[in-house]
Length: 559
Image 1: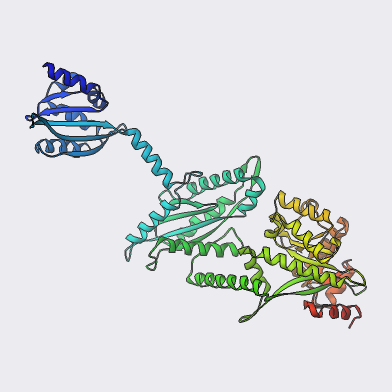
Image 2 (image 1 turned 45 degrees about the vertical axis):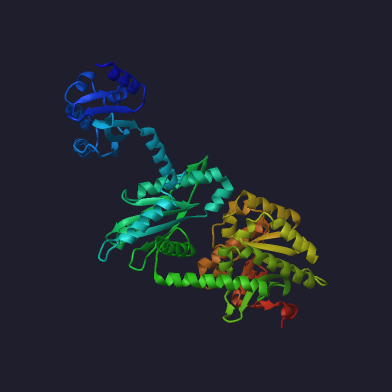
């Protein structure tokens, strides 16, 4: 070996890159130790036929035929320069650069350099994975899901197989998150993600859009029944309890499904429709699914319009409060009134309370609406109690209001500003609102009781209440739901249930009110069973504030 060649090899050995040089005839000129280590080439092979080296490299490269063929072709084009990325069978990534080798300005052969960039590729893959996957669950994120759905919509052809999108939203997740903490909530999301990966066919994509929202992309749908079976399995499996931080957690999910059609141009449109169907499923009672129909979009637009109207109604004072008396049936004395909000729309006329109160709860407008009702009701209570026997004021409280940290102060301010004693205010909560309450809400209820405010369970018997819950919550009374009252005394089973509720209330020292009383026979049955507090059309419909005092007088004189 000449001294110049020895010096060149020594210099090449000092570099990290592999170097392999051939002369114009294809003979080996020089290579360095990094090249030999990179391709596991023994020294004896380097001194022989270079084709044997290429064959050894080919055994180690995944796309060996293409790459080696390119190496041989480019050797026959001495002026060409190329860069290629090689992936080896043992998982390495090697960047290959080939260019003419010149001596004294003339081309004397070719030089190949090889750089192991495996670490950079791994880092790049990790960055790509992080950009397109949810860090909590490891599922594909919104970006990757939308890209995949966009590809399907763009490539869709007439007559091709349908595809479908599921939009999933956990029911009551906020209650779990607030009650047990965000760590427990995160652990539940991880568990839900695991279940979905197990349930959904492997070829489908499961993604987390954010929060407690998940999506599923089924790329090839043979029939609607196939989708229904997957959805029903999801609903069933998600119901199974999980243990998180020593707590047994029961969770359910509402699902909306949208099938592909020619009208979809952007992925957002299909997601929107699946979301709309999910919303309908949630409104129907949760833990169920709905398949998108075009009428749902019309309903969604209508809801948006109603929400805007309700916001304007609050600011334009289109709402008013009617009051329905609660009567002691034995003495015909009005002992209380319930505040019931009414909406007279300037164009649509009377809007049913169930329609706009439900909308207010879903949009969060129930918070400002509830405060307005409470303040107005307290002002009315102050007028009613200026003289004569005390009359309490009952005001409904939603589960969303119960979760407001400022609720206690808001109630206190309303009492102070109106001058009404706390003992004359009854706040009524549904069984569902109590079931959804967490420890923080329970503390709020205790604070209200300590203030002197009374608490009652509304619509008792329609939800999940039990004796244990009645003992847990600081309630003073309950109202028998009208669904039980309407069938007495004709239906024996309803009569027995009502008897039990009244007897239980007496044992627990709770004031019991029967609502929805409309007939003399219903009244006589309730009185005979020991329920004297009656509310319903038998005595009075809800009336506006300006006729309330006259209504009370007419009841008490029996006219």
